[in-house]
Length: 136
Image 1: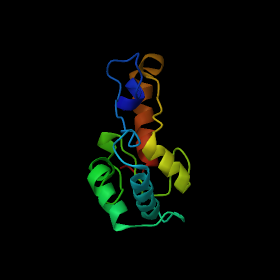
Image 2: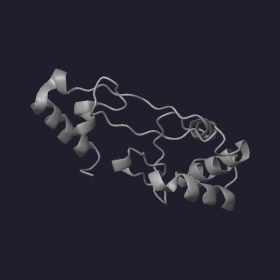
Image 3: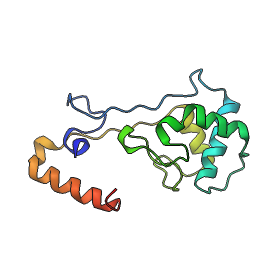
Image 4: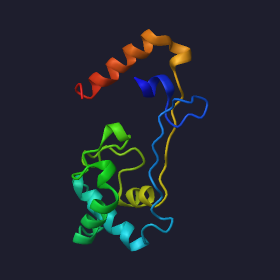
């Protein structure tokens, strides 16, 4: 409900939801480390990939990604971190897209709808969207 009302990364609303994924390609991980973690992330959803699944990739995931995306890639909604284990990809469903997202992530925005829709419609939308996720 808060995200619908105030948006996500929407500068015009001081109560907007802010969550940013670090750009791991900016001197956090090397290109080889990014490929290793991407191989592991691809495996979480059963994606076919030429990137190997390695102990290094798992360790890098545990050290850099699990705090937000969960130890099994299940996501942590309260942090705005989507699941990585369900084969639903916002920015592409290929190993190359995972590498690109880890290297320099896309971070979309959503406008605030409170002013246009009002309290009742925002609450109704929140209930509807919540129901789409099975009430979770």
